[in-house]
Image (cartoon, rainbow, N blue to C red; front, side, top):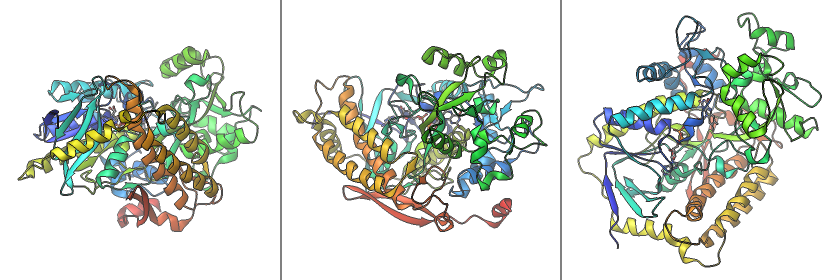
Length: 595
Ligand code: FAD
């Protein structure tokens, strides 16, 4: 076997978004030798795209806010399927994580009396999102990145991990390739933290960028971990629908938080027709009350445009299906008639430029056209809530790739806080575990040979399937058959189609050399995308109810008996098997918060 490049760390972090950087900083602070690997350039992760803010009950705007209310909002938003302990830790620790970012140099918007400002978002009872205009993710990444670099943490950019190596059932390290040269590299590490983000690229319309092919989900699954809640995929209600080249790009929820309203082609604020029983008590039932809320939040209830994302996305879907959509198949999001141009440009600078440059629409003068876009996966690696460790010893996960925290539906702003809270916890615990080890596991040459052979397979097949065609077909299957509204017939069809795609990816062939070859990279990503898609389709077929980010046309009601179980996916032969597992029991003192 040819010699390959090798590195050795105590903790290897795969992914340089917010979760990965926060984990790396924590592991370094705990005394570990840490390396970070990322598929794209440092600073290019998904986190940088986050617009609205970081949810944390700091009580800067509403003194009534506290961790208990945040915990309750998160659990209710997740339709009570969240792991209660993760939701508790998240609500308790998020304020400290935001303050810590500020200490490290992040510049947040301020309240008139100089505190970190907090804005309204769907599903949060109080204005709770710490923000930097609509560029919060950029500031978060800038701050963490500067700190990680200043600490001297080694970063391997444009390097993709294709396999986790285990020995005796525990993690020994990871194997990957350099995108530029195509050469292989192995990392020996007794603790590996997955922080690889989401899976959106399996869908046709998505706010996610090219990197989000579910790599971490699939790597964990294949290493022996389980994925939980995979049927719950969040379709953000407001993506751009026009022009086609930018379809799916996100329009932040802050537009609605700052006064924007949704209208159909008849000019009607249709969200009043879609207020579910569960949220009736706290949602305004007239336009007058909804509008008064922006000025007087104590004596009025929230506008229905700020219901959780799953509710709003389904409502938009129904309006479009009923023929009341906008010219390009969405609905209208109007802030122009409700706020001054100066206010809009100050509060939503990125949105102003995004629409001006990409769609030639001036959002201070006319409404935007928006529709649902695949945005976030609630499902992910099942982890211990306190340590972030998966069922595979030495394998950790944090951020979007981890499951459990958000249950059936994530509230806006809760991802940035999630990745800070659990990034830190996971990094610390990964470092402690590595330090406790008496003997380090080793990656064998056989493992490296097998991983190399697998990665090079597409070069050995002539005249086979084109990876781009297969990706296109996969996205069609997921969009058409496992999208926002699901039925058994369609999902059974999807599972059949996915099986045939699985067969087709054994015959992928790529042209050219190993040096910077995007076709080859996609061929490798497709294995992951298919694994994850199969998990989503199978779990969605199994759950015969509607809840959060999973809506069944054939089972439209929420079923209490399904509120007691989570679905776990594990590798089963060539495919994926599903098991039902009881929810962890919430202690009585927390349960009382819901009475
Ligand atoms: P990411 O930031 O997605 O980073 C993943 C990293 O993993 C990247 O560095 C990538 O290169 C690397 N990677 C992936 N696969 C591999 C591999 N095989 N090998 C090596 N490296 C790999 N959430 C909020 O809370 N508030 C918001 O306002 C908000 N706004 C958003 C706006 C947009 C447009 C989008 C798309 C999302 C938004 N979200 C928001 C969601 C939030 O940004 C993401 O869920 C979160 O940033 C995910 O962070 P992460 O650290 O888990 O992963």
